[in-house]
Image (cartoon, rainbow over all chains, first blue to last red; front, side, top):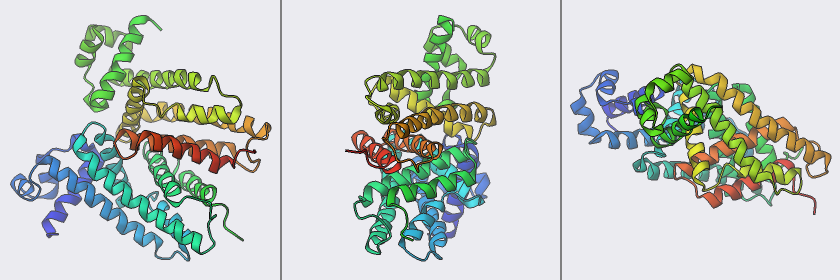
Length: 193
Length: 193
């Protein structure tokens, strides 16, 4: 992707995280990114195209920082935990990404165009988690009666629920992380000693 | 509460569920409710006061339909399940309430005034669920090592996550309900035969 496209998409995430999706105006984005509105229309066609590409960009960025988070994991079960905990970190990039993701989720209720791309991103995240659960099962680190895709879908949905509670001030970050770790134990069974 | 206040609050939930919180204009609400804007300001002081009262109204209404849902439950564990499943029903009132709740949750990220009331409503819902888990434990219907408040907080956060996925088109309703029932089993341990 061209540098200026990345610049515009980074600025779009910042603007959405600050004002919400519905507060996103192309003029403001142009000012934030330091480019012309014409360049934005040239690369993204229209506001809908821009928002769809921003959603993809947010997913890719999340994959980036969760990949970092799982780098030091010692086995598949720890990888799963770190993948999920990666979304609950008090780091500007994560916070910004999570706010924008929650905004896009909430907007998709009113905006049918967003639903397809959002469902695709959700599925891909859930499938990554399911794959780690399968690996944990093969390694004897998760109960074999667990249905990987069901557990993965619950865990990623829980991350979204906890993340929104954290960001909206209903839940402290450390408590949210502790609850999430407890959910992995509840889903996969306690880790063998 | 006076009839006309209820009328205004019902209209506010409808407008939020249709256009989002940020789309809520007092003029539009007045038209929707069939009252004057002056009457709205008289009862709710300002837009912030109106939104806070709407949040309380949504919680009370949710208590109403979840109370109906648990009426036929045969024990505390079934009550818990029905309390949670009560939020995942394809009924206009539930859908409207859930969209508005998700909107208020997302808005609280940008609007500090909403955070206190939202945290209070969240806590009260979670405590109701925790109480049912304690009752289920006393009746031998839930593992005793389960921490009621932790499990309750995870389950209600999961309901929010699943509900947003359902409403935003990432998850079918029946699948969401099945996943939620599975989460209760994962949290409390399988029901004794």
